[in-house]
Image 1 (cartoon, rainbow, N blue to C red):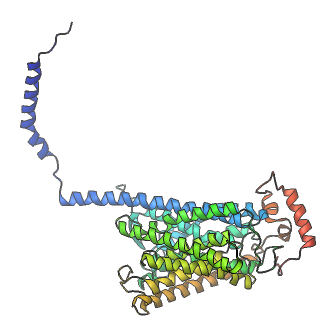
Image 2: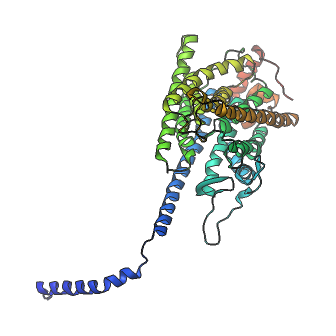
Image 3: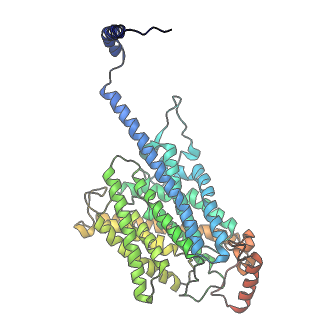
Length: 490
């Protein structure tokens, strides 16, 4: 039977333990390294890098998710016979882009600058961790306080966005091998060169304080102009209605879902471009400006189209919101919220007029890619020169409408023109080469029966719209419906 320990024994043990602690505690404390200003600073820096890394990766994941948005939008706005092709092209685009961005693109974009034009190192992510296990921060052309691999991934997501824009305008009639080739060339060469000019610290436009915070010109103007040239050289889809009447979208539900995913993904695109959480006010401003512009553009587009047709048009409202998002991407960190509303209202009207312009030129752009990304990418970039706040711009100069001179606007015009000329010229060479190799437009048989049936042997709704039915209906259309324009089948 256990004996109960008297209470005074417990008190005595506590007293002895307290005496021992009082004698030896100072020695233990002195043995530990006392915190210094340097150690506290190092700890704070490591914590900030950790937080910034989580932020940039998380926003990069949102930007990558935009691939889903593009896939759903294009699937919804295209004809039923072209949907499988649109889905596969958007999906495989990411697979192609990551490899070429790793091998060549990232080095051209963020490697050590050669004359402000291209990068000349960091190919294949050649910077490995040091012998002590530390990872390199940033890149030769970037001072971002995040490790190189994190910067690489975030910028890859942007590359995938730029290269997938063209799939929408070229949908339904592009040879699949040709799609793989031009996606690779864009991700490896064309897009990275423009990135180097603007976002590499040694780039020639960067040194001139050219303002494009998140890519209205770098991503969207490049993608939109490439899309325009590709659609022009391809010719129209077979059996499409007369010019001025767009073929009806096959599924407006998918188109709406895709647009909402894109809007959501833009919260990675723009706020994530801060590359740091250090300035929380800037993150808040960018987020608010992004949202205001998208909302204003959606409303101005649908209202403007209603004044012309008397109908509340869903597609124009969807593309209006995207136009506002594209337009605000460059100035989101440099303008006040009221200016973002004005930019959005302008973008919504421009996208509707842009669709009319492309139709009048007899260029078949099924999703309005040039009107959304090309026209509004350029407008948004130029808007910095008109509406930039002196407190927010890189060189502390205000825009023309806020009392500044032409200094800021002149640089913006120079940059947009240079990017446009390079992109259009490069695109003609790239697509012209594919055309010469007979890998730009699909085989004439694919035009007859549909690209999904010919290239993929699949239908997006096989239990409702089987391949045999697709072929039968196209045979009927071929007999009864004249094609618009002369189709170039090489």
